[in-house]
Amino acid sequence: MIKKTVSVIIAFVLVLTMSTAAFATEEQRFVFDEAGILTYDELEELELKAAQTSEKYGFGVYIVTFENLGGHEAWEYNEMVYDELCEYYNAGEDVVILLLSMEERQYDIMAHGYGNVAFTDYGKDVMAERFLDDFSVNSWYWGFIDYLDTCDEFLELAENGEPFDIGSGNSGSSGGGKFFGVIIAVIVSCVIALLVCLVLKSQMKTAVRATEAHEYAKGLDLTGQYDRFSHKDIRRIYNPPQENNDGGTTVNSSGSSHKSGGF
Amino acid sequence: MASEITNHKCPACTGPLHFSGASGMLECDYCGSKFTVEEIEKLYAEKEAEAAENLEVNEAKKEKEKAEFAAMGIEWSDEEIKGMKVYNCPSCGAELICDSTTAATSCPYCGNPTVIPGQFSGGLKPDLVIPFKLNKDQAVAALEKYYKGKVFLPKAFKEHNHIEEIKGVYVPFWLCDGNAKGNALFSGANVRSWRDGDYDITETTYFDVMREGNIDFEKIPVDASTKMPDEHMDAIEPFDYRELKPFSTAYLPGFFADKYDVSQNDSFERISKRAENSVREELRKTVVGYSMISTKNEYYDFENKGIKYALMPVWMLSTKWKGQNFLFAMNGQTGKLVGDLPVDKGKFWGMFAAIAAPLSIVLSLVWLFM
View 1 (spheres, each protein chain N blue to C red):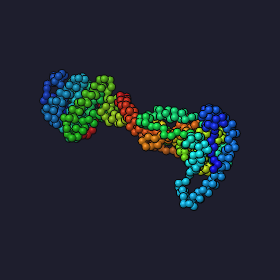
View 2 (cartoon, rainbow over the protein chains, first blue to last red; view 1 turned 120 degrees about the vertical axis):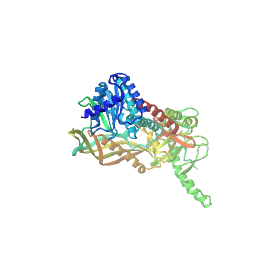
View 3 (cartoon, rainbow over the protein chains, first blue to last red; view 1 turned 90 degrees about the horizontal axis):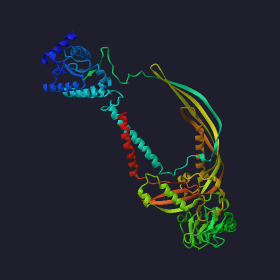
View 4 (cartoon, rainbow over the protein chains, first blue to last red; view 1 turned 180 degrees about the vertical axis):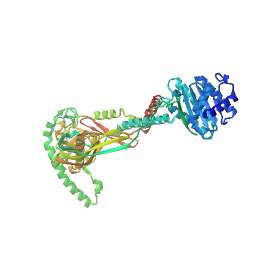
């Protein structure tokens, strides 16, 4: 039933746009605005940008909007969209799809195939951060631009052999982590500089009172000592294991990875 | 009035003698003759005894004169004469107005080194003295060397600062022998951590640790002159006690000297505090094998086993810059020089920026490309 519904939608888009024979080549489409939230010009510009990115990397970058999810989870719906894209639009194994449902105000990013390499869990989190500020104020076009720019950035990094991920060296280039690191670096530098300066300044004041008399001591005569056990204190603090924070991509049984949420 | 002062004069030409640290002898400024301390002591023993006696006699005479002047309506106020003494130079007859503690000085008119033996007679006689080894030129050179490597020293201070006064002073010190004993109770703790399921376990084992002991101290020094800043006198330590000599006024010509004006009792607190701190540190060092140590209670006591009165050689140098006085002290035996220098705030913050800015850039780059 679900598959049928989605098939009808995609088939409808297909009828509106082009013939089946044209999908495999230059007339393939990447943006499907079923919710009708984009103007014609915006749609054309996003289509062009998505097509350019897809061609550049040999990778399918898709945008799909719906009025509602028909009571389904966003990630489930997105997987069905992927199946239909494969069946009717000749989409390859390697895709990333951004799905928006307007009624539920839900989104889902789905990656498949090589997409699981280029779009890690952390990468999808960062990508969502970038477009959610636009979607939250109904700025759809600019939100999709952020999405496509981020796809281009992540695909290029993956192509260079270093996908965007935690600890990859590029993971904080635009995030708060890098900024925080730089702030820490500046603070540490200032503390080191101040310590060096204070040590040098201390050389300017050498007339200080003596507080001890080691120079004149003949040595300690230790006449008594003991070390006795007093008591033992044991503290137990509940600390369950943290979620894996080592990076990478969590892939489900159908070979896809997702990032869903509201906007 | 018979003089209370002696000028040490050359037996060969009657020129003024001064003690030379380099040769360890008294040398004549004019004919260059040299005499050992023992030779001069023999020669001047009688004169010094006489001068010391004269000091007492003259004190009585001065009191009588003062009363006579007061009867005539001519009187110095107590404030005006407080801490002052007047002597007559035996060489030129000029009046020398000195502090009441001055024991050796030089006549401002004829320049002859003068010693006031009465200040060091009887119970006031020092037990020991360390003679000067370093001379004025070496003190000046040491100060110039001291300026080197001080990155925050204002350039103008180095260039325009001139030594206002430099004098070699035998500073009175108390040298105290004693024993400090202490008893301290510490709390020692060792921490062990491990994980048990979803729990972090921290086990802290506490121990009561007691240490008791004592230390013998030999000749803890403390300056006995209110004129000398304690910080400077403490900081030029230590002196090499192997060169301590029985006191003789023959070491004084050519230098300034003061008798003590801080009593043994008044100095005792500083001495005992230093000794007790040393015992505290030494006992604490014996507490090992714990990751955390804190002191629960402690008791220390210093027993005085004898105090010696000694004169120590110190070069005092004073400079003036921007209306502010800067005082330096150099150990006249070892050459250790101490004193406070002005800090150029511009240089300080310049250095701070010069270190912080490139370091920030380097660390940031390391962070970004790590």
